Image (cartoon, rainbow, N blue to C red; front, side, top):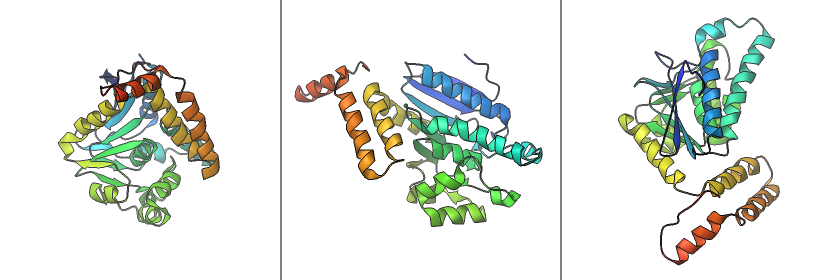
Length: 261
């Protein structure tokens, strides 16, 4: 297991839990990004893991953005672009994962924190979470995908408002906009995320991977081409033992016993 300094990694019930742990507000710096990437690699490479949860340590913040000291150290455009590219590469790893990744937003979720949450496939937020892209207040813009993922989720007009004003929104408004899947009491965020993860983990890993691939690849193509991706994955799943088990279990009125093959 990698030696993580600003993140914790644990596995339970076939769920990997990655906790960003960089007090006081779990801000992203180079070490934290490196640790997140290493923890993701462990979860993605572990065949026993079927679902991944990312959360923040403590009660205050999920991730409150980037480490301002690192932003202050930017020397020139090449340096800035390198930092943006490094962050985007890790978040792209989340988005393109064949295993579902759930963001358990247990506090302030700003800047790079929201960008990471948006790269996750599902988001559970605490009822007192504040969510936003405040980079404009520093005279900069989001650099880890915020200008691209946020319009795709909430629409270009609302995204422009959030990015250009820097004003955060409540968890309840985020839910109304489709930015988060669920809003629960702050103390229940990880519990709710684990419940969602366990439900998904009870399904066939083969079907999960095929569905994830169809969703991810398909959304980058026009509908006609995307439907061909779905056909391809439907054909691939038809060869699995789990499909046979799932159909037989339904016909026999029993719970399926998937073997993930």
